[in-house]
Amino acid sequence: MSNTFKLPEIILNNLKNESNTDENIFCVYNYVQEHINNDDDLEQLYLAIIEFKPNAHFVGQYAWELFKKNRTAVAVSLLKNKEKYSGDDFGWEVFKSSEQDILLNNSNKLEMSGDLKITIEGRLHRMHLGVISDEIKNGLEKTISYLNGYENIEALIEEIWFGNPTEIFENINDNDWEEIITEFPIIQNIKNSSWGDLWENFDIFYSPWIIDKDNIITITLNNEPLFKDTFNSMMNQYTTKCYRNNNETCESKIDLNTSLEYPYNWDESFLKDFNDSEDFAEDFLWDYDNCIFSTIMGWFCNSGIYNENYKEKIKEVQYGTNRISITEYGKYKLVSDRVEIQNFDKDKLVYFGDSNLVEFGPTTDQYVLTEMFYNESGIFESLNFIAADFILKSVNCDLNWPTDE
Image 1: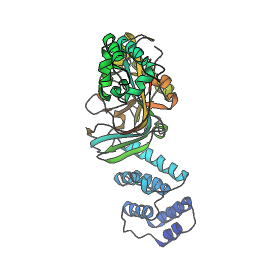
Image 2 (image 1 turned 180 degrees about the horizontal axis):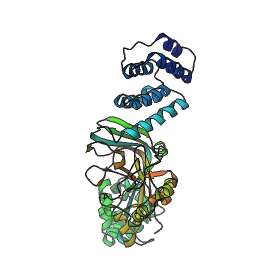
Image 3 (image 1 turned 90 degrees about the vertical axis):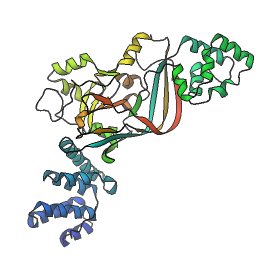
Image 4 (image 1 turned 60 degrees about the vertical axis):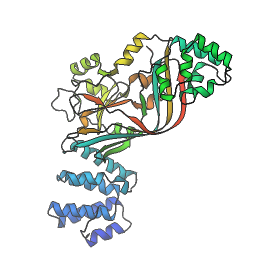
C-alpha cells in the first residue's frame, strides 16, 4: 500500500528511536489532538505510519479507529495484509482483537458478494463407515489363511485399501484361489477392484472428515481472504450476545427454522429445548461437548444436527455384526465448492461437529467438525469438501462404528 503522505518529523523521530509501540502510539495521539482536524488527514497519517513501520500493534489500533470513523473499506484492507506485519505477542493480540471486532460488526453490513470458497489444511483423518457382508467377511477370513503376515481381516483391508488387491492376492496359488472364489465369488470382485471401486464392496454410506482444532481454515470471497487462522483460534473468538431465534436483542442469530441439505437434519428434541428455554444458550455456550455458539466467522453446532443415513444404519445394523469403518490419516488440503453468494453473512455459515466423533472418533477432544453449511438460497447447503492435495500416512480398519449405540 503506497502512501505519499509525509510523516511529521516528531512522529518520524519517535518511530525511529528505541521507544516501544505504546510510546509511539502515545506520541501519535498527542500529535493528532493538536494538529489533525479532519478524517481524511487522519487516515493518511495512520496509513503512512503503518507503511513506515508495519507493526501488528499499529494496524490493530489504527484499523479500529478508522473503522469507528466509518472508514470501513480501509480498515478491512489493512486487516487482509497480515502477512506483511511483524510484532510481539501483545501486538498480535491487539491485531486479533480488532480483527474480531471489525469483522463481527462488519460482516453483515458490507456489500460482500461473489464466490465464497473455504480451504482447510493440516494433518487430519477421514473415516468411511460402511457395512461388510457375511460373504466378504467370511471370504476374507478364508483368504488370509492362504497369506502370510495378516493377523486378521482388518489388517488385510488396511493393506488393500490404497494398495493393489490383484498384486496381493496373486500370492495365492491357482487351486487355492479357485476354492476361495467358488465358495465366495465376491472375493474375485474385490481382487479386480481399484481404489474407488473398492468402496462399493463395503457399502460406504458416510465419510466424515475429522477436522481438528489445530487445522487451518481460510475463508475467501472472490479470492480475497476474509479469515485465516486455526479452528481453535476461531472458536475462542466467540460472540456473547447471539443466541435465540426469537430474541430481538441478539447481535447474531442462527435460523433454526431453515432446513439442512439431506442427509442432515435438526434434532427435534434439540429444537424444542432451544425454543422453550430462555436460558438455553447461556447454558450451552461454555460446554463444547454439547453446544451451539456463534464465533467471528459462523456458528458451531456440536449438538442438534444428525446424519439421517447414519441414524438409520445404526438401527438396521446391530452392534457387533456387520459394521466396518476405515480411517485414513494424512496431510490434507481440503477445498470446498465455490458458492455464489449475495452479501456474505456469517450467521448463515454453520460448522457441524458429530457428537459421536467427539467421544469415539480418532482425535476425541481435539475434534471440531465434519461438515460445513451455508444458507444462500433458503436451505443450509453442504459446502462439499474434496481433497485437492494429500499425503497419506496410514489406514486403520475397525469392525465397528464410532458410536455406543
